[in-house]
Image 1 (spheres, rainbow, N blue to C red):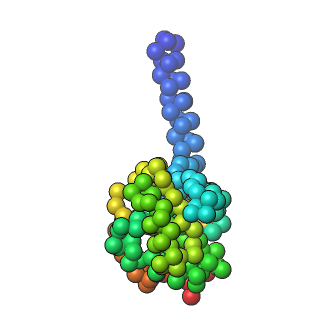
Image 2 (image 1 turned 90 degrees about the horizontal axis):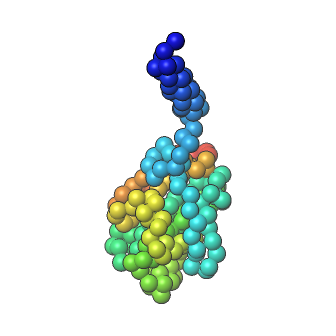
Image 3 (image 1 turned 90 degrees about the vertical axis):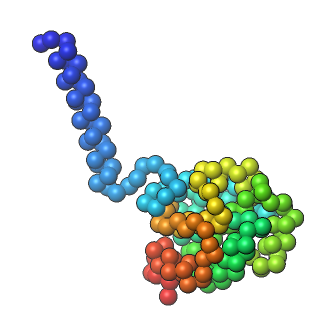
Length: 181
Protein backbone atom coordinates (compact mmCIF):
# COMPACT_ATOMS: atom_id res chain seq x y z
CA UNK A 1 0.00 0.00 0.00
CA UNK A 2 1.45 3.43 -0.93
CA UNK A 3 2.46 5.79 1.90
CA UNK A 4 -0.04 8.41 0.71
CA UNK A 5 -2.87 5.91 1.17
CA UNK A 6 -1.74 5.09 4.70
CA UNK A 7 -1.53 8.78 5.60
CA UNK A 8 -4.99 9.36 4.10
CA UNK A 9 -6.52 6.50 6.08
CA UNK A 10 -4.95 7.74 9.33
CA UNK A 11 -6.21 11.28 8.62
CA UNK A 12 -9.74 10.01 7.90
CA UNK A 13 -9.75 7.98 11.13
CA UNK A 14 -8.63 11.03 13.10
CA UNK A 15 -11.35 13.21 11.56
CA UNK A 16 -13.93 10.50 12.24
CA UNK A 17 -12.87 10.29 15.89
CA UNK A 18 -13.16 14.04 16.37
CA UNK A 19 -16.59 14.04 14.70
CA UNK A 20 -17.75 11.16 16.92
CA UNK A 21 -16.74 12.95 20.13
CA UNK A 22 -18.24 16.26 18.97
CA UNK A 23 -21.53 14.64 18.01
CA UNK A 24 -21.81 12.91 21.42
CA UNK A 25 -21.36 16.24 23.21
CA UNK A 26 -24.05 17.87 21.05
CA UNK A 27 -26.42 14.93 21.62
CA UNK A 28 -26.06 15.36 25.37
CA UNK A 29 -27.00 19.02 24.97
CA UNK A 30 -24.10 20.15 27.11
CA UNK A 31 -22.00 22.96 25.68
CA UNK A 32 -18.46 22.42 26.90
CA UNK A 33 -17.28 26.01 26.54
CA UNK A 34 -18.24 29.32 28.01
CA UNK A 35 -19.62 32.15 25.90
CA UNK A 36 -21.54 35.31 26.78
CA UNK A 37 -24.65 34.36 24.79
CA UNK A 38 -27.86 32.39 25.31
CA UNK A 39 -27.46 28.62 25.25
CA UNK A 40 -23.89 28.65 26.61
CA UNK A 41 -22.38 28.51 30.06
CA UNK A 42 -21.88 31.87 31.71
CA UNK A 43 -18.17 32.74 31.73
CA UNK A 44 -16.65 32.28 35.17
CA UNK A 45 -15.26 35.19 37.14
CA UNK A 46 -14.66 36.39 40.67
CA UNK A 47 -15.00 40.01 41.80
CA UNK A 48 -14.83 41.90 45.06
CA UNK A 49 -17.99 43.39 46.60
CA UNK A 50 -18.30 46.85 48.13
CA UNK A 51 -17.76 45.12 51.50
CA UNK A 52 -14.50 43.51 50.31
CA UNK A 53 -15.86 39.94 50.02
CA UNK A 54 -15.17 37.91 46.88
CA UNK A 55 -18.08 36.53 44.86
CA UNK A 56 -17.49 33.84 42.27
CA UNK A 57 -20.18 33.07 39.69
CA UNK A 58 -19.10 29.42 39.68
CA UNK A 59 -20.02 29.21 43.40
CA UNK A 60 -23.59 30.25 42.56
CA UNK A 61 -24.50 27.10 40.61
CA UNK A 62 -27.85 25.86 41.76
CA UNK A 63 -29.23 29.39 41.95
CA UNK A 64 -30.87 31.58 39.34
CA UNK A 65 -28.68 34.64 38.67
CA UNK A 66 -29.44 38.02 37.16
CA UNK A 67 -26.13 39.63 36.22
CA UNK A 68 -26.58 43.34 35.57
CA UNK A 69 -23.71 45.51 34.27
CA UNK A 70 -24.28 49.15 35.22
CA UNK A 71 -22.76 52.49 36.21
CA UNK A 72 -23.96 55.34 38.42
CA UNK A 73 -23.78 57.86 35.55
CA UNK A 74 -26.06 55.75 33.31
CA UNK A 75 -29.71 57.04 33.32
CA UNK A 76 -31.30 53.70 32.23
CA UNK A 77 -29.25 51.91 34.91
CA UNK A 78 -30.64 54.27 37.53
CA UNK A 79 -34.18 53.74 36.24
CA UNK A 80 -34.12 49.93 36.45
CA UNK A 81 -32.37 49.49 39.82
CA UNK A 82 -35.57 49.75 41.93
CA UNK A 83 -37.13 46.91 39.89
CA UNK A 84 -34.09 44.67 40.43
CA UNK A 85 -34.22 45.41 44.17
CA UNK A 86 -37.95 44.64 44.46
CA UNK A 87 -37.60 41.35 42.55
CA UNK A 88 -34.52 40.34 44.52
CA UNK A 89 -36.44 40.91 47.77
CA UNK A 90 -39.43 38.97 46.42
CA UNK A 91 -37.58 35.93 45.00
CA UNK A 92 -34.30 35.52 46.90
CA UNK A 93 -35.93 32.89 49.14
CA UNK A 94 -36.62 30.88 45.96
CA UNK A 95 -32.96 30.91 44.92
CA UNK A 96 -32.69 34.16 42.97
CA UNK A 97 -29.55 36.22 43.26
CA UNK A 98 -29.06 39.58 41.61
CA UNK A 99 -25.48 40.70 41.04
CA UNK A 100 -24.90 44.32 40.11
CA UNK A 101 -21.55 44.51 38.31
CA UNK A 102 -20.45 48.12 38.54
CA UNK A 103 -18.29 49.48 35.72
CA UNK A 104 -15.90 50.80 38.36
CA UNK A 105 -13.29 51.73 35.78
CA UNK A 106 -15.65 54.58 34.80
CA UNK A 107 -17.08 55.25 38.29
CA UNK A 108 -15.67 56.10 41.70
CA UNK A 109 -16.28 54.14 44.90
CA UNK A 110 -17.78 57.02 46.89
CA UNK A 111 -20.42 57.51 44.20
CA UNK A 112 -21.16 53.76 44.09
CA UNK A 113 -21.63 53.66 47.89
CA UNK A 114 -23.95 56.70 47.73
CA UNK A 115 -25.90 55.13 44.84
CA UNK A 116 -26.43 51.89 46.78
CA UNK A 117 -27.66 53.85 49.80
CA UNK A 118 -29.92 56.13 47.70
CA UNK A 119 -31.65 53.16 46.03
CA UNK A 120 -31.67 50.91 49.10
CA UNK A 121 -29.89 48.08 47.27
CA UNK A 122 -29.37 44.93 49.32
CA UNK A 123 -28.11 42.60 46.57
CA UNK A 124 -24.34 42.26 46.06
CA UNK A 125 -22.62 45.08 44.16
CA UNK A 126 -19.49 43.76 42.46
CA UNK A 127 -16.62 46.04 41.45
CA UNK A 128 -15.20 45.47 37.97
CA UNK A 129 -12.33 47.87 38.61
CA UNK A 130 -10.24 46.98 35.56
CA UNK A 131 -13.18 46.25 33.26
CA UNK A 132 -12.01 42.67 32.73
CA UNK A 133 -15.40 41.06 33.39
CA UNK A 134 -17.08 43.58 31.08
CA UNK A 135 -14.61 42.52 28.39
CA UNK A 136 -15.11 38.83 29.10
CA UNK A 137 -18.88 39.23 28.75
CA UNK A 138 -18.42 41.46 25.68
CA UNK A 139 -20.46 44.26 27.24
CA UNK A 140 -20.55 47.20 24.84
CA UNK A 141 -23.46 49.18 26.32
CA UNK A 142 -24.83 49.88 29.77
CA UNK A 143 -26.96 48.51 31.15
CA UNK A 144 -26.53 44.96 29.91
CA UNK A 145 -28.30 42.15 31.78
CA UNK A 146 -27.67 38.40 31.64
CA UNK A 147 -30.25 35.90 32.91
CA UNK A 148 -28.46 32.72 34.08
CA UNK A 149 -30.25 29.51 35.08
CA UNK A 150 -29.30 27.31 38.08
CA UNK A 151 -27.12 25.11 35.83
CA UNK A 152 -25.01 28.15 34.92
CA UNK A 153 -26.44 28.50 31.39
CA UNK A 154 -27.27 31.92 29.96
CA UNK A 155 -30.96 31.95 29.02
CA UNK A 156 -31.34 35.57 27.88
CA UNK A 157 -29.33 38.76 27.38
CA UNK A 158 -30.80 42.26 27.29
CA UNK A 159 -28.62 45.06 25.99
CA UNK A 160 -29.86 48.48 27.01
CA UNK A 161 -32.70 49.47 29.21
CA UNK A 162 -34.32 50.34 31.40
CA UNK A 163 -35.94 46.96 32.02
CA UNK A 164 -39.33 47.18 33.70
CA UNK A 165 -40.22 45.01 36.66
CA UNK A 166 -42.69 43.09 34.45
CA UNK A 167 -40.02 42.47 31.78
CA UNK A 168 -37.57 41.14 34.36
CA UNK A 169 -40.21 39.01 36.06
CA UNK A 170 -41.26 37.49 32.72
CA UNK A 171 -37.69 36.27 32.21
CA UNK A 172 -37.56 34.78 35.71
CA UNK A 173 -40.00 32.04 34.66
CA UNK A 174 -37.11 30.58 32.62
CA UNK A 175 -34.82 30.62 35.64
CA UNK A 176 -36.78 29.77 38.76
CA UNK A 177 -37.71 26.11 39.26
CA UNK A 178 -41.48 26.55 39.56
CA UNK A 179 -42.08 29.80 37.72
CA UNK A 180 -42.42 33.20 39.30
CA UNK A 181 -45.87 33.10 40.88
